[in-house]
Image (spheres, helix red, strand yellow):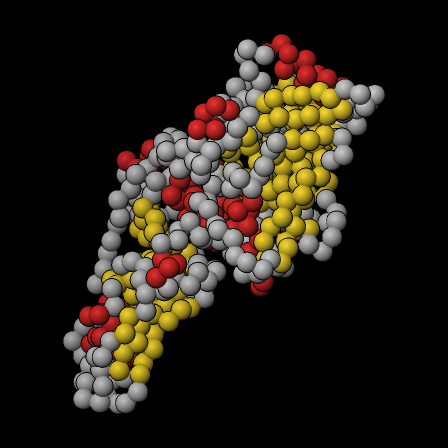
Length: 454
């Protein structure tokens, strides 16, 4: 088997370097799955379209198409049911026969499937849109999905060769593939970008789940050979369109296991070279979330975007202790260090970060002033809800800053303003611990926080 560029590079880089490479770039694809439930049960849950556990669900998917004569309409409901097994199998074969060229254009079929109502489009807007040329306008840009065609491939040997889509307009930034619930084996969907690949294994025997993937439009992708069954997909062009009013971002519903980062994280956790004694891993958020506003604090982590959302989702999925915290920059300040150096070795403070205990609004204080003999760091230690943390491994540089704390200037008049950056903090268990060993055997970790502060 030939060695891919990604595998060759991975051999040269250690686990930590591979993680840094992945989080240094924006996601080029994302995917997820939506359970299909009975129509009667779906109608009972229609208000909010959510199960009691918050998982989005979908009713069965109906496809209609006209025969060549134009006088008869055929109907297929997916997933196939045990009651209508023979009939559904006949309709699938009829659809396959009708699609002589491998697919149907939009004027040849219709469907009840709606990617908006099951949160797929909102998820794509959070993950992929921030990394495109439209990201500077993300507050006024929304994602519009336009159905392009229906594809069907039959096993054995049905496949789609590797190719790159040509964007159909300046607004066309990505493609969405919906894999409908129909039994098949093989037919993996593969997306490649700069030596990294994402492979979606959608084959399922019971076919009770809608699965999907979205990828930026100018990236190579292919469908590998099917072994058996029929693979039916809906293809959508995703457009970045300017909008006048805001839209509600729903709960992030991406499948972390289908992300490139998930594979890199699992490889790292299985390596004794990666943080063997455990500790804290952190990623500065690369996007601004207006997190100091009271109305925005409750939206995190579900309002995270781009690589921020992927990073949090992967570690949350593994049940490691992960949280979004503010990190104060420039603390401890130089004056504070000069004073404590008289009593304590200055190395005590090397590598320390002032990390907030939780997300909160801007704090205003009347401490300080002309007669105050302390330092800004002293005030922050007393009044900003934070801890000083050592030995945190940071994967990137600080991102967007927001005003965090305001107090009277020390020893003079005026005000001193301090800013913080948001970061995603993850507690990594030591290599020989039970939680990390469980992860190596495909189980979840359930790790409590590791905390070293000064």
